[in-house]
Image (cartoon, rainbow, N blue to C red):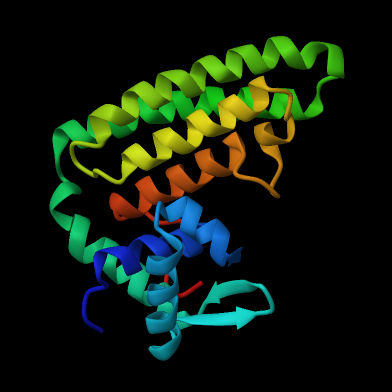
Amino acid sequence: MTALPDEQFLLLNALWLRKMATRGTMEENAGLSAAAAESCLRSAADHQLVRVMGDYYVLTDSGRRAVLDHYDSEFASLRGDPELLAWYERFEGYNARFLELMSAWQTEADEAKERTYARLARIVERHVEALAGAARWIPRYSHYAARFERSLEHVDSGRSDYVSSPMVDSLHNTWFEFHEDLLAVLGRPRESLED
């Protein structure tokens, strides 16, 4: 298979990270317009890279292969970059703290959640700042920063589902997707073609 065009990779990657998504979710997570997403999905369907299940899309095995092959061809040169690897190690420190606080937020009594969320928000804000550095290697990472900021705004306006709900573009979903994306960039995806 030839390399995916940039917009198609963004859309299919959003689907790969979500596993199953509506077109609207893919558009939002990929940062694409409705027209661009429609064109990419039509092409992906023509090449049997996606399957439609009602309002949802899933990648076919060929679609998963195309996404993972794109990571390999586009990012292989970064995998030994000492600066990126050092950035990744710093991220893993944030990741451990994020997961600890997310677990606490999900299991604590309501009266303790506000304090835990404040600590969680600080970790996310630091990560958003760090994403500016990572965007020099992978410019699309700036879109993750925007997604985190939108989720923080939703939580701060009273929408606590934007902390960890799987039904919205929550902090937890965005963090998981970013981590998965970064692992794939580094050639360490959790999901392999054999899965």
